[in-house]
Length: 454
Image (cartoon, rainbow, N blue to C red; front, side, top):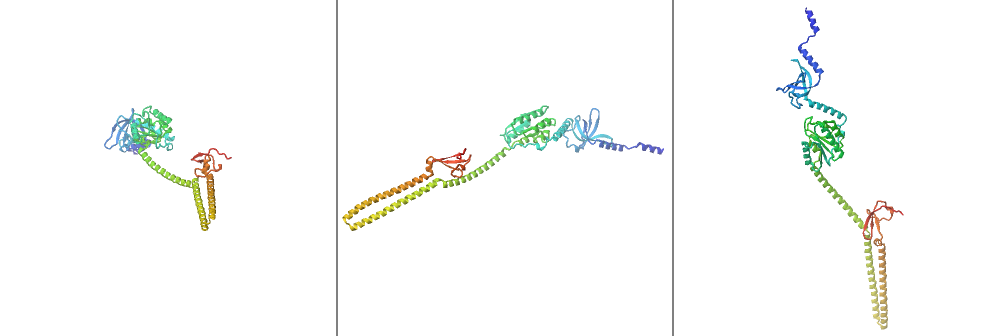
């Protein structure tokens, strides 16, 4: 009998309850690594330990659940009985009592969970298509001529944006494209506003935004239609949807994501005070550069004036006039010297006559003296006339060869305005050159249009 009982026990493979529960627990854990389960919360309790215990049920069944305190950091709502939720959990078995349960790692409201899955799917799709790539991001203008704002005209976001723009740079015009920011038609209005802004090109940066809200409230900015309109925009777009912790598809596609609408206005507009300080600095530098240039040009002009004065025909004429004055003075001095010499001779002769004193001789000599005196005076006058004529002829000759006399006869003198060199041949010129023409009275500058080499 003993042998028979032992054989029967071996054939039945009898295990203990503990072994059964342990193996069942291992089987559940290995088979259900992680599951997503949707149901209604009931019997929710949270003891002093901080853990949450509840029952997840549907119309036909229920399962016990536990969520430990360490997993509750990312819990975005308060679990309450009657709420429809989706949980991510591990299937386990509480071995001491043999209770089958779920160890919950994540819990979210059912409606938002569906939206979150749609969000993740669209995000993955657009990312794979390259809509989020940094290579497609446009650079914001440093000083926009106008700023476009696509948002609700009655929301808090538009007031915040306008307040910041008014404070930072009130001179920049703001163009508002009013749209609905939530609801079934919001995505169409937003996409149309982006297209309109690009068609009319009235602004060169766009702020797309609204205030905070739930995932469902912000869903218009997670639509593929809006994402593709942002990607196709030739105008840079700043996305400012919700609060700092809110992220939408529009944030990833836009050229820049701002945490809030106010921050977007900061990014889009320059600081007026910084620009004014920059202008003052540039004005000061410009004045310094201009003054330095003017000083350099003035020095060059002074040097050219002195060079021109040294080469000016008037300088040569003045030298010739001084030479003529010297010659005239020397001529007069020679005449005076000659006269004094002749007077000395006359006086000597008179003295000789007075020494002999014969009346006839005296009278004869007087007559001779008178005659000689007349001849001397005539010769002197003749000589003076000859010298005057020579002086006049020399003056006329000098005047004839003077460039000014040539100019007075209707001729003109053409010079290179930059070097002052006289132009004597058309070989020195080409079309487009500037020349300066000197007349008897004044000068003018002209441009060479046609050259006749004949």
